[in-house]
Length: 477
Image (tube, rainbow, N blue to C red; front, side, top):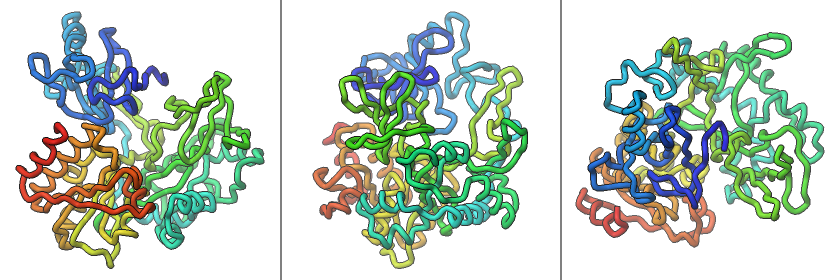
């Protein structure tokens, strides 16, 4: 449990999507039941009371209230709890309702007026600053070793403009005294940003950059907020770098580390349990010796990727406003990205989830690759400026087939299959032939795994919506 949020589990799964990981819930502020944050659904898929589709987990009916502020998850409450709260005089905001008078913890971002929030810079500006940042932090030995171990060719590792971000400057002072960590000779973050400002000016509106205030001296200076690990550039349709996504190495979850000859780096937390740290994440050692994936957010280990962003919303319900905790920082909201080369065969484009899969897929399959931040965020390909530009760009390039390459374990997850079906229909409406790229799971879960293990790919195309419906009926979708 972190900040009041309780992670779901296989024993107590999310009642919205039915899975036992990633989602969470928290007691409602009005005291009536729980508020459920579903990371996989963000719309009214569960029918309101009186409908015929209750939750498959517990049979209850849940109301879709809104999306989370970052637009990646859905907020739900059980219908009976919402009714009880409203009957007791509490105001519960619900999408589509009149929320103009609602304040307090149930208000959402659009209820509050932004104060001092930076607009994101134009793509050309983002490209200049991010390219300069990457020059100062070329991929290091540890990053190269990780990708080579993952099956990447040396040429791809060294020619992809990847970078390696170090831990925060203050944490580095602790790490340099740990003989088990590799020596870090890269520029300190503040020094790197200073060089960038001398060359390009202040990075106002560039996600990741912000003004830090020294707690001891009160001095203010520009800094960058990012997790440590390998940075993957995300490109728009013009080849400009408009975001950087970091594959975290998790070395910034703690100040001091010890080393176990069998299990590697670890630290001991307040509960006297060891947490082992590697590229695969943070594993907690239970008292019986078993290792479980750590999900407590206070160890900063949620997920494996994190985009550069210097934004943390601070709400002031009394004034009806919200501000950014990072002075002069900018939100780096998720977008779709594109990886392509001039020599690619533009007949087919492939869409997948995750930068690592996208880069290796483009290099090996010689096809343009569209990268989305999550299977349930495919709407960004159609609804955002960057996404729509990419789609129109690919059509002009002559793309005739748009293949979806979700992970091979998708058949075990109705949510993923539902997203795949929805994306196929949307692609068809855009006038492009949709397709499904798939492979046997014995060759690996992701697109990159199948490439590394030299597994054969299969492709199924659809000519009309009826064919799409028939295909997914066999999976109960």
